[in-house]
Amino acid sequence: MERLKNVMLLKRMMTVVMIMMIVVLSGAGCAVKKSESDEKNETNQQAITDTAKEDAPQENESSKMTKEDTMEYRVAVLKGPTGIGFVKAWDDSENSKTLNTYNCTAYGTADEITAGIIKGDIDLAAVPCNLASVLYQKTGGKIKIAAINTLGVLYILSTSDEIKSVEDLKGKTIYTTGQGTTPEYTLNYILKQNHLTPGEDVTIEYKSEAAEVAALMSESDDVIAMLPQPYVTTVLQKNENMKIVLDMTKEWNQVSDETLVTGVVIARDEVIEKNEKAFEQFLTDYENSVQFATENLEETAKMADSYDIIKEAVAKQAIPYCNICFIKGDEMKSTVKAFLGVLYEANPQSVGGEEPDDDFYYVK
Image (cartoon, rainbow, N blue to C red):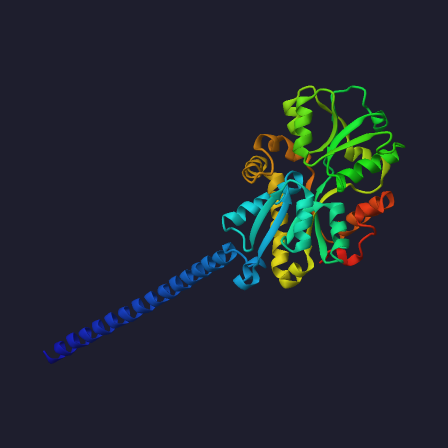
């Protein structure tokens, strides 16, 4: 009996030991599984974190700007091609989407902008190329040119089938605009290079605004005029008898090796020096605005209309032919310098009496 008790006790002890071993092994197994699970979770979490980092917007120079870095600028543009390029930045500023604030005004004539720059009432402006040089001389070298915003945009219109070359303009009267600015000197240069004397062989009648010339062309069938886009489109839409007889950019290229430059972006020196970081942001906004204008025709046309730059219906057809651009840096300097050199040789007063020094060009 005693022996039987001992055997039963031994069996019970063995059973307890086996149960304890099972529990320990099970726990270890769970621990291993948990460890593997944790490792898997950690790997997944790291992947999510890495993906989030990749998807997160990268910090750029603009995002580093603080409120103290930004500026409120008074910006002047001309109605027409030289104003179209900045219209998106203008609209963005109106809707508080730009870091700087741009208080813009569209002017009908360059003379209005000239007075504002000299008086210090305008900070930044889009103006005819040669006017920038004239202003440099008038302000004692206190303005800089920062970019080209428009290339050739001039055309001669007529109902006549007889005008097929510049020589055919002899004895004719041409109505145009832009006296004392790029259009006048471009026309005079092309006429002279084709052996015609302005005022003698060809009579030139200047109007204060391109809109005046466009209106005259729309009402008459026997007028010859030189106009920039988008006014060319306006005339063609209103008078079906009118047509382009001469592309002045092509005529320029036939008598000159240099690029025809219409509009540029200028700034007063003190404006740049006061906050160069904000000025660089302005140039970035301008460049982005030009890109938008060339890629989003319908939206740009609507904005150009809303800011009294040009009517929407006209802008839709004209913008692709306005040669809107944004050229800065060394390319801007070499292109403008060569163009002003051509104008200087033709008429020194067209650039203010002498060619600008190198500090006229804002190159970074």
